[in-house]
Length: 630
Image 1 (cartoon, rainbow, N blue to C red):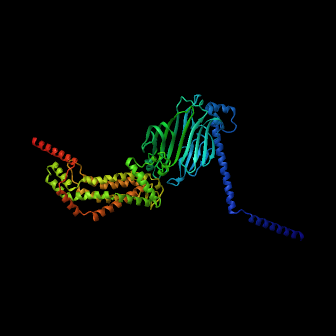
Image 2 (image 1 turned 30 degrees about the horizontal axis):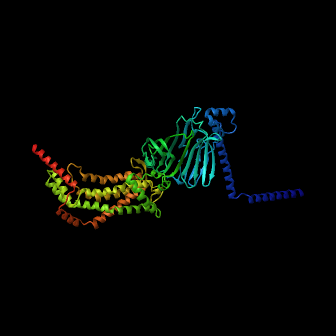
Image 3 (image 1 turned 90 degrees about the horizontal axis):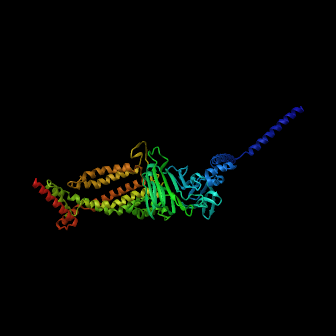
């Protein structure tokens, strides 16, 4: 009985102990936060092991190439000496680790092999697909100095190991990459990165290498880059992707969108421009010459979707007292007029505002005006307001143009009568037509001249909107990005010259252009007399009335929606101005009365008009003489 009681007590004891343990385990189980921390720690350990394995593999590869790493024996040192000569010292003591430095606008990675920037990321920008903007990444760029040595070797710095060091000096971060012959003899790439600055001070200098570098052989700097696609339409982006450069003390030029291979002299900077972002190499002492090449990498935009163009520059360098000494700068940043202009080094020429008068209008009128408006209103509204201001400013030109067309319309019955009267003598009909137009103060040219006045403004704005960095990734109504095309429908196929999408603003602009041309060209077709020996201007205008909207529809489907928005608003306002002029300002009866009064007054001919009349009279006499001889 006692044994049975003991067994029961034992069982009860075990149950109680188990219960207590279970309760303690339950009480001490990790919280969700603790579980998350444990999982994070495990993940970090896995990542660390992966990184260590990668570094080990890299070290092994480097050791195979140069003998880098621990345990470089004397035999390996001899092999390195045979391969690299004096620079074997750098290979033995170098590391394969990359050097990473950041400012508030740039994230930079320096490669130990070659000593150059192997990665450049612009921290404040993303591309059309919200991916960070990289100007240099994944071996799309290289920087190399090719030189000969006194022991008959030809070396390329891009293949040689540099030894990095990083230091701070105030707000400057200094990265020194040294290709060493000894601790006191080296070739150094020195980079100075400043907070808030896209410009990197870059010096290339050698110390104690006058007996190592062969001064009788050419020394060349080679800089290559393949431009990454950053915009929605790679073909559109490619139109504005090219090489710009400054030469001969302030002159500037560019290669354009075509493939190019040029030699330039007395060069102060070379810029690889990728529409809205640029990579520029500047020098304090002008390069005597440089060979630059640009090649289009987009043959089919449905297949070639990564790179836009490839760029290359080959620049001969000169030794200074047997040493390399070049003071330069790198600019990696936006092609923003305000940012570039602030450097005062003519870099604003990277923004293609147009040449001559067109560039002047954009720089000193449209750029300040648009910046002012964009400072306190959405950019889409700023485009509309700027368009209204431009159209109001040019309204007097439209008034003159429409007045001329009204005069020609009033004179049409008299002009038709002259042509009918002298239908067998075209020369005489032309003489009397010109005489009547002169007396009445009406001329077809009077309608053309006001239109010519508007051309500089038209072309300037055509250049301005695709180059306005402020429009990049700014939305308006259904448009996501005013610097790119808008999309209301995607097509399952590609239409040549049109694309695989439908943009609404070009459609609206085309409709507005059609009705505008009907109001202006339609009236001009009726009043335009047919000149002897000249093309039928009436028919040409009629064709243009239909052709221009179609061209607009196709050409602008892939263009910046900001530009299409401008043309749409501009033509709508023009239609409104013309209707107001026609219905409320111009009085055809009054104009007709004024013209009749002018015809009564003797009209003094200008020298040009007299000369034309004399020439026509002589031509008429010659014609009559020929008829008599026949």
